[in-house]
Image (cartoon, rainbow, N blue to C red; front, side, top):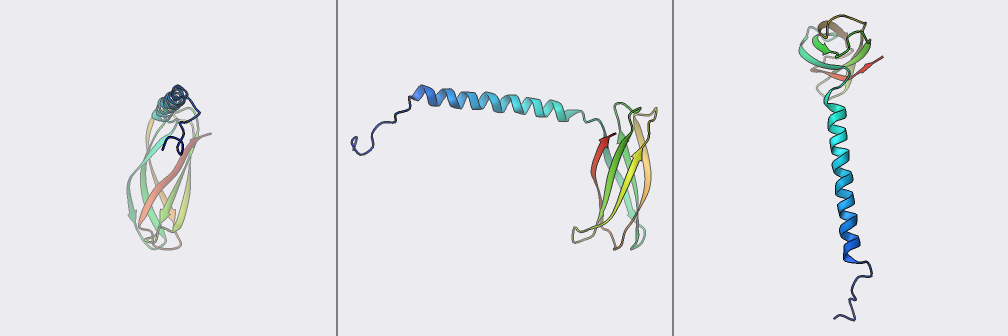
Length: 124
């Protein structure tokens, strides 16, 4: 049996060192990504939406910026029951003195929407 399956040529300590190095790198990446994404420059949340007709959706959203003097852009998307995008709205956030703001917008759609989501919010 030993002749058929000879021992590995790679020393065991080398395998353990490789696994330990991968574990350390994974831990460093995890801490970095958690700290980097913990405080985004702009965050937004859909508070409510009302489908007013087959062509419009009224949306109320709240935005939060740690630095309100920095302008930002948020993209909202209305979706149909089939998850197709039926409307889109780009909300420009000019510089302000308030960190937390409420916004009321109307998204025009070409088909009845059933949900609204925020695609992204980015600073300018």
